[in-house]
Length: 285
Image (tube, rainbow, N blue to C red; front, side, top):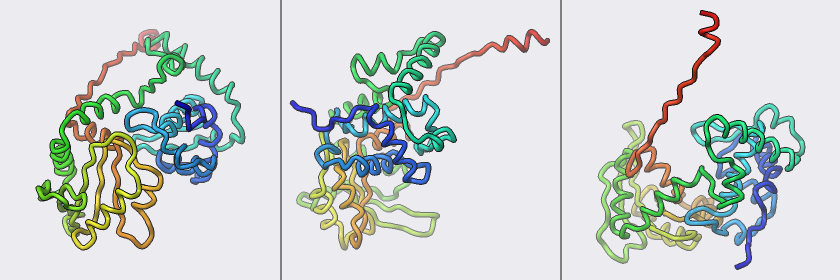
C-alpha cells in the first residue's frame, strides 16, 4: 500500500521550529500539529494517515522531530506537555538535518555507555518504535479488547475519578449516540450537565459523528464530550469548535491513555532509583 504522508521526521525539523515561532515561542502538541499542517499545506488524507492504532503518521513523526530538536538544544518541554523554543531555538533561522542527527547520535552513544539504554537511532532504524508511544499503544490495545459496554463503564469510572458527579451510563437505544451523562461543578458554585459518547474505535472519528452527537445533545445538556480509543480527523476537531454551535470536547486515544496513567487506572508506575557518587565530596573531605 502506498504511503500517503511522505514527510519523514527530519523533514519536520524546520516546520516544527517555524510552527513554534508562529505560536509565539511555545505551544501544545495539538497546536504545533495544526501549524505544521498549515505550513506544509497538508491534505486531510495526509493528516489522517494512520501510523498504527490511535497515532497518525503526522503525530508520530512530529514526536520524533521534537525529540531530536530537544536533544539538540532547540526545544524544551514542561510536565504539562507544552513545548517551547530555547534561546538557541529562538535564534536559529534554519536547520541542518545532518548536523542535528549527527549531534544526537553522538549524545546517544555517550548516554548508552552510562545507562545502557537503546539509541534513538537504533529504535528508528529497526522497528520505528518511539519510546514515547510504546506504553500508550500497549494500554490502548488492552482497552480495545474489552466490550463496548465495558468501555462505557470505564469512561464512567474515569469521569468519576476526574470529579464528575452523578455519572450514569444510559441504557436507552437509539439515543443519538449519547452513551452517558454526568454533572461537573466548577469551584463548588457553577454546575454543568454533560453528556458523553464512548467510542471504542479503530482509526479516525470523522466530522459527521461530531455533528450527529451535537444534534442529539442540543436541549439536553450544557456540554458534550466524545471519548475514543482512536483519533479525530482535523475536520472533526474543527466541527467540535465550530463558531455558533455548542462546543464539544474531544479526548482521543493517546489523551485517554494519559488520563488512565494520571489516575493510575490499570497502570502501575515504577520509579527506578539512580545513585550518583560525588567523588569530589570525598576528595574535599
